[in-house]
Length: 449
Image 1 (tube, rainbow, N blue to C red):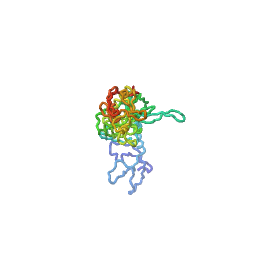
Image 2 (image 1 turned 120 degrees about the vertical axis):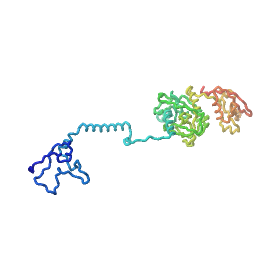
Image 3 (image 1 turned 180 degrees about the vertical axis):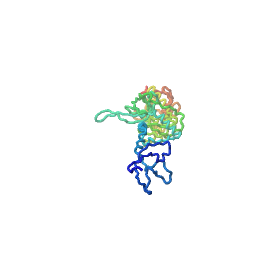
Image 4 (image 1 turned 90 degrees about the vertical axis):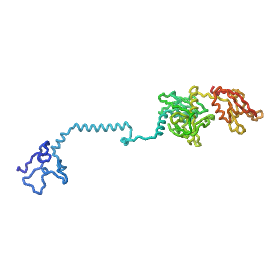
């Protein structure tokens, strides 16, 4: 045996169980342990290199546990044999993936916490889908109208415009005509129309009909921004069918309310002239201040009326709203677009309130004034006047026109709406204690000639 200071050099595969495989080759390396020339005691533990640790319940492991440390030369060799190009590629892939994820979050503009949350598609019923589609298709046709009034500062005397009201309207054609209520634009010095894309244009008044509360505006907007609303008809409406109102209540743009037709052939009075508006549609769809001038649609998305008034002591929606039927609106709008005015026939009289005639105990329309240059004055109808002693002498009381009974002013207007300028009508009047029939040729209003 060599001296105790000498080191034993041997091959690692001659002591390790891995040497059983003939294909495995290992490099020789010097052992770090030195052995004494004396034989070790029997109780001493064997050399850590020559004996491998065993597990009590498992077979001998081919790979030594952590107690067996890899020699430094072998560790350096293994590190040297690893491909450095693969580490660069892996790092580059990680950087690219992180950059792509950050870019997708930035482009999608979503919350990072919800970026990985998958939202299931919302399931809607068939009637809900129809309502959503109706709103999306007709919203671009509804506009927001702002009524501006000129005011003068009391101290500086500067004139400025302030909003005095707002309402709704809808696009009638691609020429820029906007239909709304007359009371929405009444008293305005300037008007502004805001389209569905929030673009605002100055509007000009084309014409209006105070008796039917209808007005037509015009804006110089590109045709691609103007989507005319589909026109329906109101002659075949039925009580109970669904209706939809789109408007801007209280300045909240493009609000949808739903309901049904509660009644037909209602009659309301014009807010401007007091003249009755016949065949009005009654609905329980919520109509509030700001809805005026907006469209009332049927379930197919077609226009059947213009929301114009509500019946409410408080001024808010009480479930009783009124809309002017589209059949009435279409004829008025056509005249306003072509001529800028509505040619409506008149008798040319001023009549007393219905309550005054009821106090006399008669039924009809009492003529208070009949100008000599008007149709009734030319035909010879007598007005109410006083004699030389100041006593009141009643004028003619109209009881029928063309054989149709007249009980009040609304009946007279209803019959005149069915006539045209130039028509000759037979007016039956109660003059004193006898009745007379007088032919009258209807004429347009004096300010429309």
